[in-house]
Image 1 (cartoon, rainbow, N blue to C red):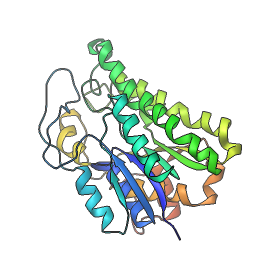
Image 2: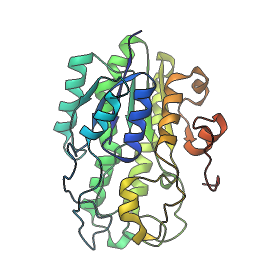
Image 3: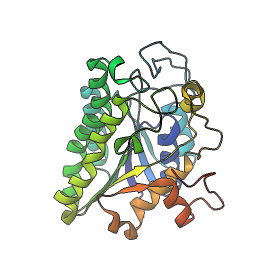
Image 4: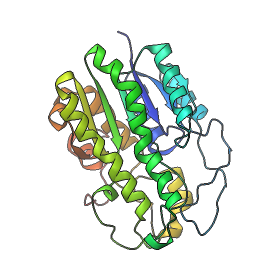
Length: 284
């Protein structure tokens, strides 16, 4: 049986890498995209306008590809930048030219940079625009490439990795255990797409979901977030969200959730997708 095809954004590390590896183990070939192609590349990843941080983060597309290929997956590495619409179009076009289409698109990547942990009156408008471009307009653009071939063949699945910041107020101020306007506003915009896709194309076989991952122990959070009031010691491994995405893509039982937001960690526990794992605190 031919392996299904998936396009995963932000797959160089963290949740995206976890999703890519779960899909590879589950029988998918992969097209993976992000900015970091090789280990050690340096880019701005400070969460605040108050300082700069260009230190290298662990992870790369080539590292993820190597692990996925070891699971038997064919892997296309298609670098792209959420801030560069032409690069997104080029990545999508490359995949479509080679495969004709994909069965699954996972929008995991988000804008990494200042504004995530800045207060409202400290946030420049141009920084807010970058978050909206990365977290909402880029997924929208990629859907315009991948949805038509899905519709032609009778269906497919689209997953957006959302955040509770998209629909609830932070528990504290940004930098003290909460988050800033840029993150919440832009994720709310991206979050709105899944429900519309279900309404407009659900009867044509399109399944779309928001997955709220909860606190996940990623390379960037371990390196960056301690200074902003977050302790990642008891957070979930990326595999948890990877297995949730695989289940949503592969099981008809998920059809009843079309257009909805799912709490990833709770669903993982309910379905025992990572045997023996449960969060330290199920209340997220």
